[in-house]
Length: 224
Image 1 (cartoon, rainbow, N blue to C red):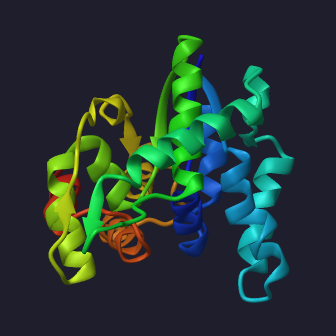
Image 2 (tube, rainbow, N blue to C red):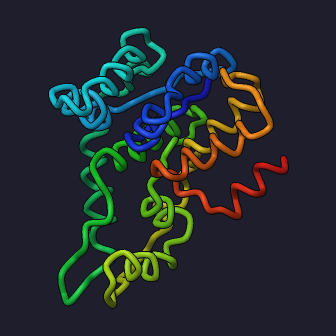
């Protein structure tokens, strides 16, 4: 059994690009479950469903949950209380890495950290898992923490102070972006468009809706 955990950004990206439909077919080829935490559900369904501008997207994602294409962690016997507790611990650690003029900078959200916490709980059960996450800061925190300083200076347009004791706790997570999910769907023939420019269009559309993929990476994927 495997699990793919979805962060808010990846779901919103797919929704904005009209690509949520690929999840149903991808799951048919996936020996496992697609999961969202309650923190992610709040961001993609509970809050936006009451806002006219975002209601349609929220209803699309809710349909996936109602049809059990997306499932809660309880489907693996993992309680939301345990995830919330560990999420808070991870948030406290991550949000004490960067200082600006003596003040701590919040790097991550509860939803993102809930995905990491769920990944930890799945790993304890020996369930292989990956996190669908588009946000660059969390990925850099986990994959290249030394790059946080430059990333945050570019974001904040001022000097920052990187304070790190031990970042190894964040190095164990595996990620996939919405761009790569779209790429897999394209290669499996699951995209309901045809033509030589479809792959390029998919990759650029996901990039410009929040996927932290570079132009160089897009060129590499186009050649595969």
